Image 1 (cartoon, helix red, strand yellow):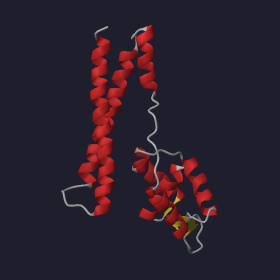
Image 2 (cartoon, rainbow, N blue to C red; image 1 turned 90 degrees about the vertical axis):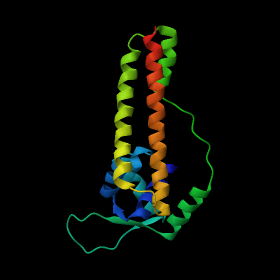
Image 3 (cartoon, rainbow, N blue to C red; image 1 turned 45 degrees about the vertical axis):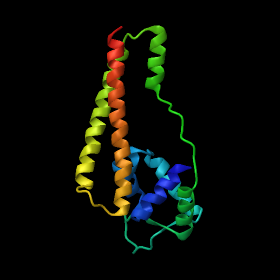
Image 4 (spheres, rainbow, N blue to C red; image 1 turned 135 degrees about the horizontal axis):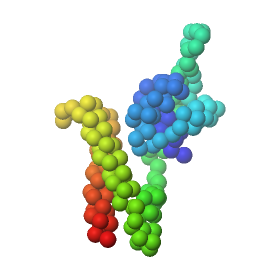
Length: 176
């Protein structure tokens, strides 16, 4: 149920067309909640049918995209969801399963995959740090920016964790 809430959040931040939303997902929200363009457009239709969003009135013009805004019912839905509770999801990562399988069948080839993942996490960390430097300069930020920065910091810390863990895993499999 989180994709509709991610869309409501994005639309409350800024009324947008479906295309603008997909671009924003690719640049920000998608770092921690990914969705395909099809999923976003499908969810927009459902949110509109539910009375949570509506298209903004616009002047008739060929090729103009419909922009959506959140209605009071959509804000109430998002507010209720924010105040709700949800258990953490269990980790389900194929790399962890591969490493567990390597304990049984041997580590041949797993080192290359661990190195590939290490490179991916190092690049993601560099991207997050660049975003932090660009979007959150200084120490005195407004409350909404502080919360967005906190989400980014969570991503930064997760990437640091994966880099440390993968470095340890590589050392472990190289001993075999």
